[in-house]
Amino acid sequence: MAELAVNVDHVATLRQARGIHYPEPVAVAIAAETAGADAIVVHLREDRRHIQERDVRLLRQVVQSRLILEMAATSEMLGIALDIKPDCVTLVPEKREELTTEGGLDLITHQDAIREAVNTLKNAHIKVCIFIDPDIDQIKVAHTIDADMIEIHTGAFCDATTQGQKQKELIRIVNAAKIGTKLKLGVNAGHGIDYNTIKAFTGLSEINEFSIGHSIIGRSILTGIDQAVRDMKQLIKEL
Image 1 (cartoon, rainbow, N blue to C red):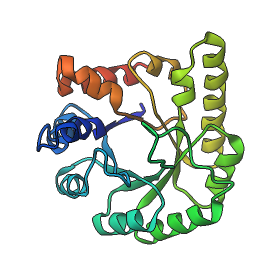
Image 2 (tube, rainbow, N blue to C red):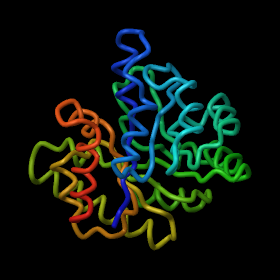
Image 3 (cartoon, rainbow, N blue to C red):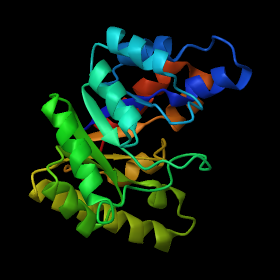
Image 4 (cartoon, rainbow, N blue to C red):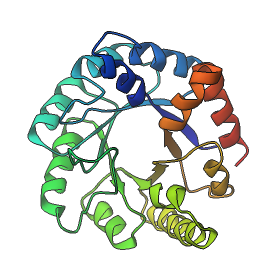
C-alpha cells in the first residue's frame, strides 16, 4: 500500500491571510499524524507566503512520522535544511509570481547546480527527492545526479479538461513511474490530487507515496482533519 504524506501549507495560508497566530499548521500536522498520515510535508518558500521558518522548526520537534521539506535549491534554503535536518528534502522549482508550483525541475538545464545541492544534503544524511515532470529524460538525469527518489508532478493530469488529455497525461505518469522504479529510484507522486483523481492510480504499484495537501485541507473544513485524512487513506488503500 502506498503511503500518504499530508501537506499542511494551506493551514498557514489561512493564518497568514490575517497576519495572526491561528490556525496553527503544527497542530493540524499532529492531528493528521493521529489520523494515519505517514509523513508531513511543508514548503518553505522564498517569499514566506504561508509556511514560516518557525513552523518548520516546531514541526521538526513534534512530527513522529517523517518530516518532508519542500524547497528551492538555494543557498539560503540549503542552510536551513542543514540546520533543521528534515527526514527528506524535496527540491522544487519556485517562482514568486506563481500561485502554486507549476511544474517539475528542469534537471537537464540545471543539472550541475542541482547535483551540488543533492550532494550537500546527502552528505548531511538527508534523503533527497526531486519534484519532476513525467519526462523520461528528466528522470534519467535524476538518477545520474544520485537523487534518492523522484516525485512525479501530477498537475497536468489532474487539471486536464478532456478525457483524451487525461489519458495522455496518465500514460506519461505510468511510464515515468515504471522507468523510475527500473532505475531504482523511489517514486512518489503529487500535485493537484484529490478524492476523485486519486482513483486513476489504481494498480500503479510503483508509486510509493502520494503527497496531497490542498484537497485534504479543503475537505477538513467540512469534515475535520481526522476524517479528511482517514478518507484519503482509505482511497489509497483501495488502489
